[in-house]
Length: 175
Ligand code: IMP
Ligand code: MG
Image 1 (tube, helix red, strand yellow):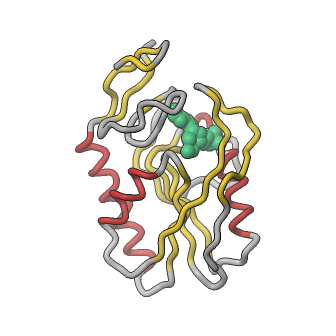
Image 2 (tube, rainbow, N blue to C red; image 1 turned 90 degrees about the vertical axis):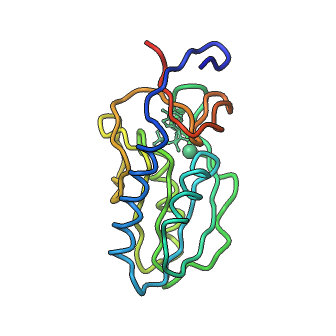
């Protein structure tokens, strides 16, 4: 698959993604039964993960979104900007942040402290993809779908220069 100047190859197929999501949903269902839960999806990348995960969550829950930006092209800029804040009241609720991918963890540092400031009962992170060798943040994700090495991927919500989000499989940058 070609996106602008870069070539990508098939990396994680849709059925493996869905299997990982089912696993994460089961872990969350076990841990949060009978609790007041609000999921907070991180736009834009997490939109597909949020949609598929929530179809597998059978207890009553709220869902909202937050939008921040840190990436330009294939590298993290290190600076994270808040573009759409959280409007829901999260006091005394159990918040689960939903990320498409945790890379350096810098985005998560910012989102975590923004949400934590509003006094939730608890705050955890679930991510579809995790690059442990790139992680340099304060809040490692509690729920991880698939761990991957430190390489650039697109698809299933993830973009390169805002393109490539609309695929059901995940692709990696060709070496
Ligand atoms: P972090 O702040 O470095 O953890 O980066 C988090 C955000 O960067 C994610 O929510 C993604 O939007 C983006 N990102 C990180 N790694 C990749 C990648 O391999 N492909 C596309 N986007 C990525
Ligand atoms: Mg993102």
